[in-house]
Length: 442
Image 1 (cartoon, one colour):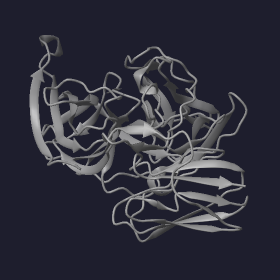
Image 2 (tube, one colour):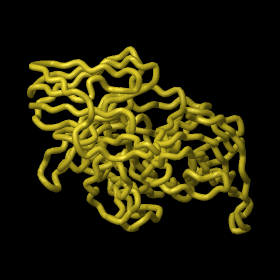
Image 3 (tube, helix red, strand yellow):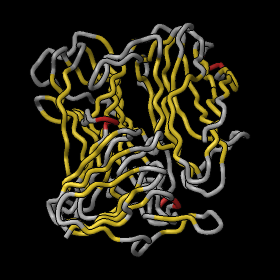
Image 4 (cartoon, one colour):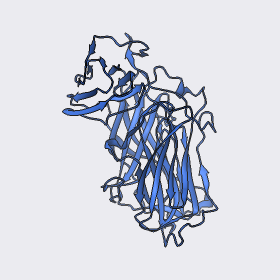
């Protein structure tokens, strides 16, 4: 359950004299957010804005406890946060947006640091929202806060306009990487985005999920930039949780900057590509590129020269600099023991097996799949009927091929035709310790 949200300014700290009084850093906090054991909490809420005129040159957000101590991912995971400015309507990604997204981070732990001379313009009257998802990995209740620092300059900088581009326009912006490929094989999904204004791309970042290798942007003459993933080493605590309730995302997705910038012209078509490993399934993934574009004349030649001042930024993490290839970590089905602690289910689920000669129907009600165990022939279509008043999804934890539904409240339906034989171990990603199902495809 979420607790009451308290919005407050924690501190306003002036930087040393070297900043000439032109720059200040504001620290703010959103929360508290109360999470029950193993709860995945989500929301879109109002959050404090600086109430200043100026330009944001840097921003960073992470989870802390009441005393301000950082909270590690293996305790509560900051899956994602997205800050939006309610004073501006966004160009939008797949459709027109009511607010403008200007900073996001998550498991990839990114701090945006715009190149010298550039900033995201804010005004005293601006009001902000934050969209968030936090995952409690422990059986005990927890209380967390989202702490974020914003560096603001009142010098006249070149303003940037932020754009969020997803490779999937499906509900929730998710898609699934099927898996089943050879070792080191990849899966690439692309979407063409039309540049809405002429100018220069001066910064880029990305949001991705477990299994991601990179998110890139390419023009007519080839790749412009890529935000690449790095993973922790084998002893990283996030890979040694039991049970595994969520496939860990990269510990780092790089932030790319250039003061010279990549010139683009209004109407240019950029190819945004999300590349994942495909040797095993990855369900309900995302591939979202964040671009910051400064105004200007833009591209004047067909294939402009690449900037010579490109920098790649990463924050340190456990096992830094890490590894490029994602670890083979799949979520596990689980159940609560008598002490309320989740234990992995390695064998068959309890309950009767329903065997069909064709298509099958599954009822989602009272926070449960009915039936829990199902056997269908190859090529059968399984239809899940959502009847609960709270959100659930249908997500492959492990099995022959990945798939996942969006979040649904009842009444709603989702269907999937299963063509690859094997055992599909399925759960609700929002209720991973209470909702499990297996489907044998004969």
